[in-house]
Amino acid sequence: MLLIVPADPLRPRRPDPHFAPEAQAAREAGHPVAVVDHDALASGRDVTRAVAGVPAADDAVYRGWMLSAARYAGFAGALRARQVTLRTDADRYRRAHELPGWYATAAALTPQSRWTVGVDRADFDRARTALGGGPAVLRDWTKSAKHHWHEACFVPELADGDAAWRVATRLRELRDDDFACGFVLRRFEPLAGVEIRTWWVGGRCVLTGPHPDTPTELPDVPVDLGPLAAVVTALDLPFVTADLACRTDGRWRLVEIGDGQVSDRPSTMAPESLVAALG
Image (cartoon, rainbow, N blue to C red; front, side):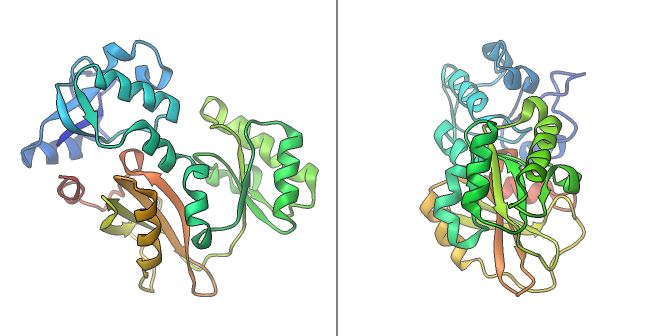
């Protein structure tokens, strides 16, 4: 396995400090490591130069900052030209990275959702009306602004169209150029505790631990991964994360699926554990 990580913007031959522990763990485990220019990849400019230092490899895994599905496709194409094959191809990255890619398969385990393509108010109102009344959580296709809960994430009442649109407008402002594809409205479900993050390689759960937002906390009740395992198998995704939380009625719910390459590792998880699971 070749591990590819973003370069340090100030010292471009070295790994970005955030991913340096994983790069070091990979080297110690005998895996080659290469760095790429993430800013160039994310902007779509001079992608060939951004990957110029990556050696040929038939099994490469990226661990780095988030890329849009379109930019990831460009990244994968530039690597292919260098005889580098990413374990996760562009289609599978999109399926994991964007909620509409995995929602239908996981619908029984996750809050009911509707989404738009684009940011038109009329499309937003159609999605809002289709979801019905009551509270909802708003995000775009890849990410929420949950740290701005009341102004850009939580919709107290779907029936109040103007208030819901104000939340959507603020989300768009905060996400700015990172806003992805359209709005997603998800029915609000009250949760009883913190989330956990599970890591899956080849359809098998290889690690279970805290969510990066609460790295020292775990739920008090055990989680049953059986139903989720069937979903991950059906999605046919090589490396993903799945975040779960226990609802107040005691039922475990899927909060999010994400591509494992761009999912943050909690600070309390040893980098060696993740590298071993991937290798």
